Image (cartoon, rainbow, N blue to C red; front, side, top):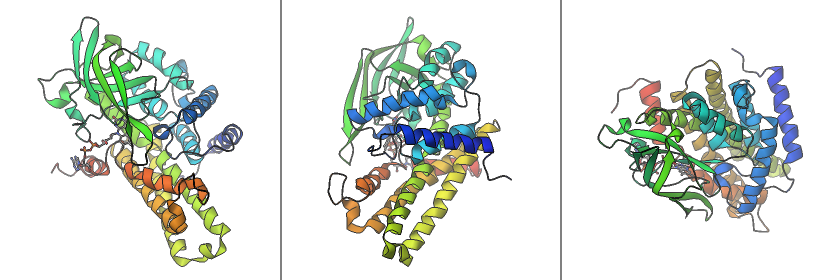
Length: 391
Ligand SMILES: Cc1cc2nc3c(=O)[nH]c(=O)nc-3n(C[C@H](O)[C@H](O)[C@H](O)COP(=O)(O)OP(=O)(O)OC[C@H]3O[C@@H](n4cnc5c(N)ncnc54)[C@H](O)[C@@H]3O)c2cc1C
């Protein structure tokens, strides 16, 4: 058993760090879950510019085949890249496109879909949003009611999606729709790609509890999706969906931002000698340090399994549950350490750590919900990982 990284992997990590040091604007206030949290046009412009630079390096597509703009390197390398970007709270990540949709297209896409959609993702030119959830279909995603009716050379889509992160900025959306209402629910779903500028799409903002805008309702009214934009076979979209959800739950970003916040808190207490000596604070930070280590190991394991050609399902659910819940625990530790200062937002002159803990504390409430709730992940772990019967 080897818990270390190879010299090549360590060199790559250093290369990314040098790049981020040079390219991230010095006054940039990082975000702790970037793509979902792009809240202003200015942040989006910074993010897009950075994504192009990352694209030039070829880092969105480290593990893909060369013919689609990839480098044919390992999942561990891809994981190191994601870890560094998230740890440094850098702009420009492409969670929806590069980390979630691309692996699915590589497995289920047609040759034409791969050639059309993968290179712009690799170059950081085109951004994606996810149209899965509906008002009556979240945890029970297979209950989607958005309809897809086949007509000539296209499908006509009518219905509504909700909680679509970043759809106000994205160029394209990947989505599920019911293409056969007369069969068991998992068997009548198809998976589509649509240009978000196509006629028949209305995007409306949903303001979250922090008062910021990163989520959307998306309405389809007679939207036409050409047949060549269906991924996988008609009515077999559920298989594609589960692959996408696995990819969504697999990333190391959640663990990496916890490490980032932990290090910021450590720096803060070290600079204030009395705080650093406080036994309660020491204990709490030690507890978080153990947990961050566990969270990272769970994520590395997923990448390691992928490099062995295995499909980590419950393992990805385990990592997602643990690290998304840890995000909020780490925020809580920040609140305990900062005391009343922890409640101050970035625009207060008394704010410490530029209001990051206040923002992090509020925004992490939603992390165990997004991407599938912790309860649903525990069901997956119990059924698939532990082999327990369905209750
Ligand atoms: C910040 C954020 C970003 C998001 N971004 C996107 C996005 O980009 N695209 C997208 O499509 N969706 C997105 N979502 C939606 C997200 O996937 C859903 O919120 C999530 O799957 C839960 O669905 P729901 O909100 O309908 O809750 P419900 O499914 O109604 O669940 C309500 C409660 O019941 C529990 N529950 C439900 N079923 C079970 C069960 N079988 N066993 C045990 N408990 C159960 C849940 O755990 C939860 O506590 C986002 C959500 C958030 C918070």
